Length: 307
Image (cartoon, rainbow, N blue to C red; front, side, top):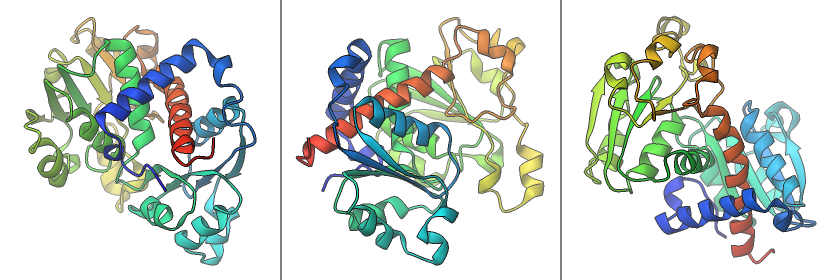
């Protein structure tokens, strides 16, 4: 049974096909309005989410399907000690496809190995977040008209930022990609991401702590929040949380065609005044996420022979 746990589970050709499907959905939504008629999606979210959970649910409804939702662990048998494996086996009896978010790395893979329906990883701890990456790719494609020959600056929490890890892996498969890694020393991109993803693909990258110095060379600035929930020490979080704040003044140093992305939620790292800048694309990402999740649900259900 085909599941998607990591964006690397999808080939470059499949990514392009998903983008093409999403573009077709945008152009002709009525064509897809009953594509998943009488099919059911379970959204199993063991940690808080707004955009991802609602995006999956909206995606399934707009495909003509139904949703069974678990929005918090305390409302499920996980509160009684049920394992992820048993939850996946149980829920498979009720639905045709599962989207799952879990605070523990590897939980989605455990679910996929035990479910009898496709499982989509909606984020597992600090590991990866493949459908956010799909939203990111569609946003880059629609805004820049290409996925190659781009200089991307990742800024903020690069250590725990699963969206950064996933997008870096996806972009490493395209030609002419350069990365600028902007973070405090304590939140640098993990060495395993460099060793396993960037270096084998010969992706040039440089590390810096200075956002303003990097802005002038970027095609894309990908901001991230410092994630309180990933810290064991509140003191460290408070010290680092406002290290990078993108303001209107700083945007004057950026190229006119640079785009600003952010997986959201935003805390303080982008001033609300930046929202009116035409280069701000983070709310476009939210909408693009729905379209790419629609495309992925369709792909997996077709491969499973369900539709």
